[in-house]
Image (cartoon, rainbow, N blue to C red; front, side, top):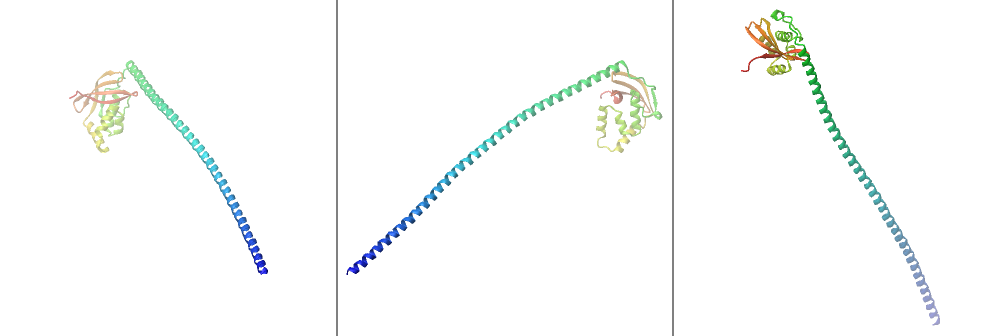
Length: 250
């Protein structure tokens, strides 16, 4: 009986030791797990703090970059505004310069015209070497006298030389002729020029009147047509040009 009790007590002590060992092992494992969890939690907290700090640094850097970009854009806007102001000033200056240039050119032209008028007033148009120009004598006589310029224009018509004829005219008469020739061919223009002088047998200057320093009126008998025409001649750039026939308004 006592042996059974002793055996039972021995088993009981072994069970208690086993339970104590199990409990100790479980406690150690639990402590280790707790330590691991604590370390992981600390690591996570550290990472979170670092992430927050990094985000703050990045946010500050981005804010600084944005501020720098804003300052740059403001500077560029100010520069553009300044440049626009300078461009406006340059445009205004250019307009004023162009205005002064135009005025200067006008005054120069008026001065030249005044000098030419004074010269013409002092020196009338030279008298023609001849007042009779038969058809067979027609040629390009130049533009030194009103009569020579008129004969040069008539000769260009006889030769169907539209270019030389236009060069013999005043700018106003050129514009009128070009308007009349509009839509016509070169052949039609040539035929018209020759046809207008075909019946003329000669020209005879019977009178000349100085109506302005740079303008004379020449009376010409048109041979072969039995009529007398008044011809306007103008001095342009020191050359006399045919200004057309002067006829009473209808």
